[in-house]
Image 1 (cartoon, protein in one colour):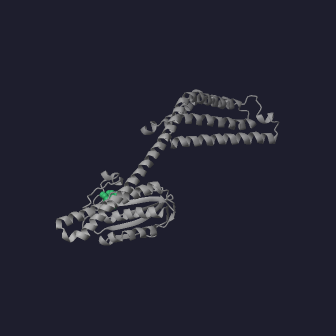
Image 2 (cartoon, rainbow, N blue to C red):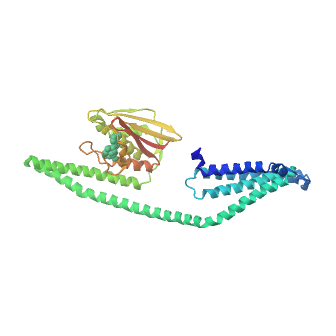
Image 3 (tube, helix red, strand yellow):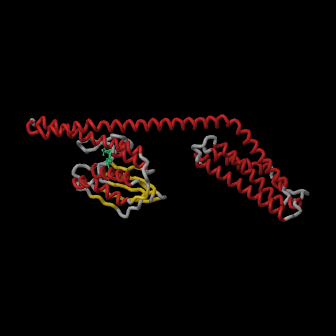
Length: 390
Ligand code: ADP
């Protein structure tokens, strides 16, 4: 009750009901005297009881009255739903009141065709006049605020465009840098391999180890650059979206991961049938390869990975969940793990580059989808993606 009373709409309603109740107590005869017809003639007499002109007026007034009621109800609903975001929403309410009273004046026009309740019709008209004049007066001081709002919207649109341009320039820069880095890296890797093949036996074990480390590091860096290029590519393309069979996408992902699945003796349980989704086959395969790959990888030593894949559908949105029995993720790292190169473990503990989830999140947003997870450290995680059902 207390929190409801803090709401302006609730207070206005209480005020209006209270004022009407007070008026009824203070002036008990007012309503009766408003309803009196005196010696007046109903409008039908002015229309000489001609059914055609009566129909014309009555149907037009009814249509206008109901249209006004519908407009004010829609406005009230809009203000209620978007009350947090609409500035000057009291102005919309004043506007709604003005429209509703206009509607009632038309209903009175219908009533007075058959009953000469002109006092009541006049009183409704007077309320409409007060609401209209009050709204008109209240509108003027708002003009500067409205102009400032329009200018603000224009400015934020300009800023958005500038930001978009800067962002795409940065992405282009990252792409070309990553691309150019691969050439010297290939040379380093090639030289280390040649050295190892041609002179390896002549080198002492320590030198051989150094060479192996160079080859290994350049291999890792090449993978990192490839993933960075892929991340940048996903940001630039406009993916073609169509109905995709999730079972075939999962089969492709499993095929790409078959070495890891075999090595870890992972058990993958797919709860079929999986319904189709609107997505891009290539991007979705990358996303699922990543999520299933992580589910197989991030398990405690000695634990056999058990991954369950299942789908659910609600309101036209398909959710595909990948549940594991892995090490889990502490809630403090909820957002961190989606950042580029962000990892919670060293490469010695669990191999990886920290690009996978950033890439998956980007791919999901390019497909108008979402990616999230629930997790209990020590018990496992459940990563899910949401896409429009196909
Ligand atoms: P990578 O797998 O290359 O480390 P990702 O971007 O895929 O990079 O994941 C980022 C980090 O999120 C991982 O290093 C890991 O710490 C954590 N993570 C991702 N998936 C899981 C999972 N299923 N269970 C536990 N931790 C996970």
